[in-house]
Image 1: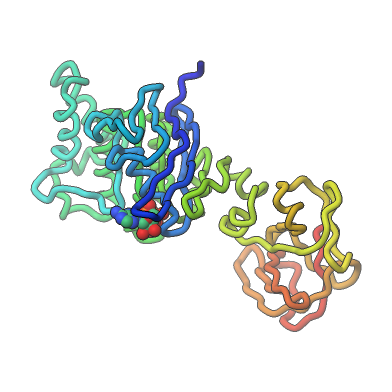
Image 2 (image 1 turned 90 degrees about the horizontal axis):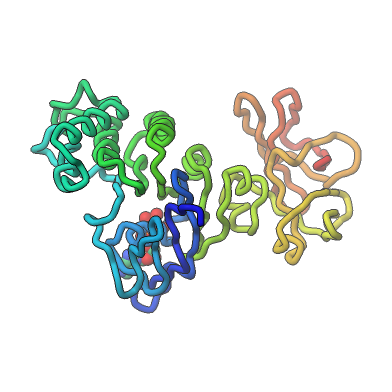
Length: 343
Ligand SMILES: Nc1ncnc2c1ncn2[C@@H]1O[C@H](COP(=O)(O)OP(=O)(O)OP(=O)(O)O)[C@@H](O)[C@H]1O
């Protein structure tokens, strides 16, 4: 059998009579970076708390490297799990220096480290990987937000856990810092190769960081796949609408061919069964093209936004509004009558 890193096996969870996780399953390979992505309240943090051992699932089990970590009877306590955690709030202690923060988990798990020298080496390593070597004698209040989040990352990885759980670690940072910290997290993950479970409600974060994304909706898994699979081949209307923008065209599917209801727009391609059943075709704004003459859905430009490399249009076609992204050289005026196709 392949050494699986983490098995989430049919996990369900209720708070009172409310079901917040419903039969959630996934197998995450050793070294994989998986994001759990969903709207507020969909159950992301509850799943992470079950993975961390803070709460027991009502049903199902969690295994790490074939060791049972949780089911509804047994739970391995968070301190005994081979894992690190990074929280949104940083959770740093004001009276401890940066170096002491990183030493602390190693002292707690001293059995894993044969000698003091080895512990020191692990601290030096974590400081170096996260770029904190120069700042190690400072206290948290002497650091910027990004540096503080690096400290919580360094503390979480110092003991080189098999599993790193991250709960919206970037959401307290401003937008520029978030983007640069994404690159840092990706670099550090590639360097240490730990399995990462990363909770976020930010699609951009999930798409740019992850090997795979689990899309969670009302406690159920909508889809698990690579960023490309999720974006280009959504398996449900929810995933299509949640990740990026999506236009839903009504019409009729025959095999892999789709005709819009008025017969004017044609699309050829493989699509998930649910779209056949619902007789709709999900098309991204960049899959629709605007033409001045020819065959297509007749529409009028309602809105126009210049974005630099492209122009974002909102086109009204009868009672529907569609989003279309076009190159800047294709310049149309608000109120212009035209056609949409996807050839
Ligand atoms: N201790 C609790 N008691 C009762 N209900 C709870 C409890 N914790 C969470 N919930 C409810 O369970 C649902 C899932 O909560 P959870 O925190 O897992 O969502 P989330 O996806 O992490 O949301 P957010 O992105 O806002 O943090 C929500 O409806 C929430 O109100």
